[in-house]
Every structure is written in structure tokens, then in C-alpha cells.
Image (cartoon, rainbow over all chains, first blue to last red):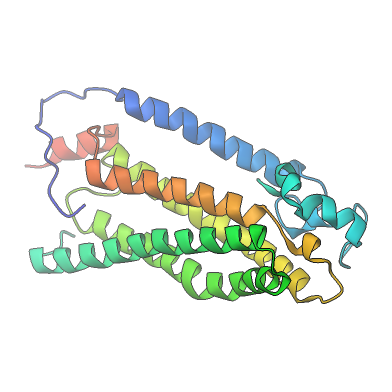
Length: 80
Length: 168
């Protein structure tokens, strides 16, 4: 980042490059997914709260319910 | 304020060191997560999840903030600016997003360490695919940021173009 911009000055604003539009769309989708998972994923949203049973306010989850979320097959429950 | 060449070189070295260090730390976490997920030894599994939380506080979080801070210094202290070029803007957004997700995830690290420390919890309950998934996604994100920094794809923001033409 330390070097001066190497781009030649063409005099007019060239508009938004295609790579920026593609990146923007991908970033928007990722952020939307993150926000949706943050607020819709059961009690506690995106955090350790999702490891707990519904209605459990702080105690550790019983093993039977927690197993579902912690085994490798529970990948879908663990991610964002 | 544009930094003099020597200071600029020093700041760039600091930024590259912190950012590459962050990538390395995430790779180490990915390895730790895979060990926790696949090791047949119960003590190793518990140890992997126990060490994640303090290691994240001592390594991941400081490196994330150091990378963000040194990146801001680099942008503001050179002619690149912070909002003049799209690649700089995207790199900033990626770093901020990764740092926010990391800070959010610290609570999950704490929870998993608690589970691992509980001798009554079965090792199958202690195992979690979540750290591996998060570390893999973080690695992908940081690699994209690295590619942006190296290739510096062309594209000036409208603000950057205006600023460039304001100069005498």
C-alpha cells in the first residue's frame, strides 16, 4: 500500500469497474446471511446460546440435546 | 498527512507483519479445530477446545486489531487514502467484518472451553465443527484481503477521482 497509485489519470471518471460490482454483490450476500443468522438462530442468535435448549436461561444444556449441535453431523447448526 | 519514505516503509513492514501473522494464527486455529474434531484421544480433544479461548485472546484479537490499525495508518499516511480506491475500501471492510465476527465468536470459545473443562460432559458433546468452519471462512476472507493488497486492482471511487482533480 505504500507505493503511489500507478494508475494513469485519464481525465474522466471511468465509472465503477466490473470487479467492484461482483465483489459488492458477494459482500452484500455474505453480510445479509450473517445478519439473518445472527438474529434468527434460536435463543441467543449467533453465539453460544444456540448450544442451549429452548427456554434454558444459562445452565448448561443436557447432554442429549447438546450432542446434536456438537457432533460433526451438526455442522449446519454450528455455522453462521 | 503523507508519511516520509522511511516511516512509510516501517509502517508497511508493521502492517504486513501483523496481517500475515493473523493469517498464520488462523491456520494454526484451523489445525487445532481439526485436531479437536478428529482426534480419537479424549484428553487431546478437551485440550484443543480449552486452549482456543486464551489463545484467541492473546493472539487472534491483538493481531486483528494491529492489522486494522496499521492498515488505517498505511491508508491515511500515503497517497492511497482510505476511500479513494475500491480495493482499499474492500480491504478495510473485510478486516472490520472479520474483527467483528471474531469478537462475537469469543463468547462461543468461552462456552466451548467450559464444556471441555466439564468432566461430566461426554467427549462427543465437547467436539464441535464450528471452530473449523469459522477458521476456514476467516482464512478465505483474509486471503482475499491479501490478494487485493498485492494486486491492487484498478478502480477509483468517485470521491477519490474528485480529490485527485482538486489537487493543484
